[in-house]
Amino acid sequence: MSEIVRLGVIGTGLKAADYAKSWARMPEVEFVASADVSAASRKRLGDICLEAGKPAPREFDDYKVMLAECGNQLDAVYVSTPHAFHGEQAIAVAEAGLDLFLEKPMVTTAAEANALIEARNRAKSVIVVAYNGVLSPLVRDTHERAMAGEFGDLVSVSATIWESWSSNYVGHWKQRPELSGGGFMFDTGAHMMNTVCFLVNSDFDRVSAYMNNRGKDVDIVTAVAGRLTNGALVTFNAAGEGPPGCASHMTLFYSKAIVRIDAWGAWREISVGGKPGVREEATSAHQENPLKSFLGVKFGREQNMSTVENGLRFARLWDAIKASAAKDGEPIQIADIA
Image (tube, rainbow, N blue to C red; front, side):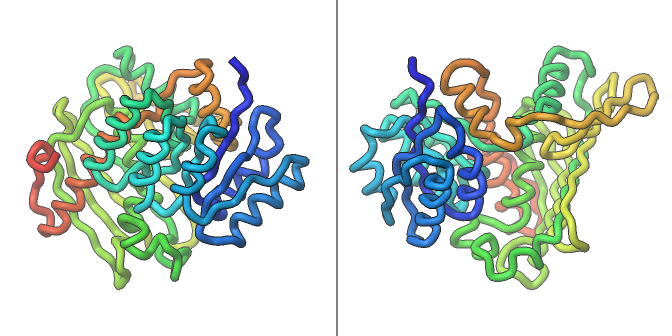
């Protein structure tokens, strides 16, 4: 099997352009087509390809036309659009029989997640969700060791993430609910929730949530208390207003160990027997160039750890958080809304 990937891009904004600077220089990647409502951003992507010595992709202002006209010339599609469009576009890519590298968060609701899984199963497509955390070797190693029982039983999780998000994205689509699907908790906070969902290897059973918009049209601060189906307890704290910067601290308490790690898997500390953990730093080109992970999965060199199934677990959690916050913290049973 040839390991040349003919790539289409849906959404040629700043993230796609930033990634393209390295992707266009990869010998195994050919940019064939791009779709975006902005002609300027499409041209920027084309110029990046030309600067790398590659042909510029064909341009479309409608992704449906791109899939119809170029589908048989593509092997895979990268989707990097505002969150609210992910579900429709991802399902369309899968239904076209193409493999998919999908930006986070995967979709906005559990219904969309289930529909994407069904489309994936029918087409037998490869779908990888572009979460930095699950691509981190420290997160993957933590997951494997926890599943092997090294840390004992999971007791509880305390996860916090913060960013000067409210001021960073004034006027940005991320603060427009019809495009973003949520505020800080669903944007930067998605890294925290997804990494926790991956590490605990359990669905949520019940959650209670509060949100504060702090004068914005979307949530800026969110606090969640939840219980997993395996009985462990989880708290999330997302603060999208504060001094400049962005960081995350997550602590997983097991019966035999305490694991501290950040949402992106950049560092980890494991404490055993009451002894302080030593700080480990992640070094992985896959976090800087996540397309390498996608290609590894597509060509069978890697196991897909960032799956649509974990995306469904996260989507169910997000549905419950929204439902509880809308009722001022009333506890929500996941099974009642799934």
